[in-house]
Image (tube, rainbow, N blue to C red):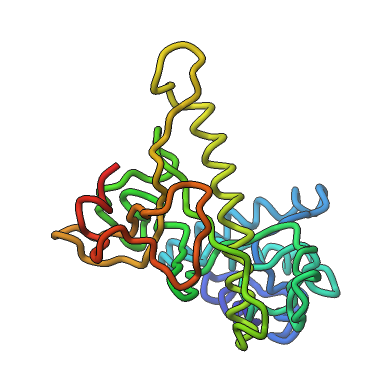
Length: 263
């Protein structure tokens, strides 16, 4: 998040704490808060909300709430952990995360949280959290024919294969992205499956388990598809069949075909 965000104190008519941009970067430039001491958090929350409202009144931006959190932390002198974030990975280029400066996946596995805040593309695989919704999000609206994966009786995501070794993929950041997708997709599937099991009616009567379609969903960055802005299609591969990083999984040449766009 850098250290330049301290300019926003003046922008919203607030007095900045006595820190410079370097201290703002090193001590307060955080991502989302994972663990905060209760007393510190209670002191920060009113300021966090107040700053967010003032930032939004000035200009509606995606990161207003995040900047406001850092401003509240700085105001109350609640710095980040001094040696970086030992809990999370989000971006191979991120500053002070579990995998920063490390090339051994065994070390990346120590991450407790996968912060999927980025758009990811590795070979035939694409990911952004908005792509698995039918209608998109505030920044971009979609018109998918397929339902979002939280909707009832929807198949899950096709899960990618194990990440490539450095002998196959020489680019270290690409290996990290492949590792990220490999770790993320099974967890997305487990969470959405549990959600559907709790809130969706069964397809059959009694206690018969829900019968889902045999194919799986793949995502892609928005493309036109018969007049619709599309981000999902169905794979030809049934669940359990090995995936391939290079393969798109299309049953026909076009992801817009009826076979790839209808359950």
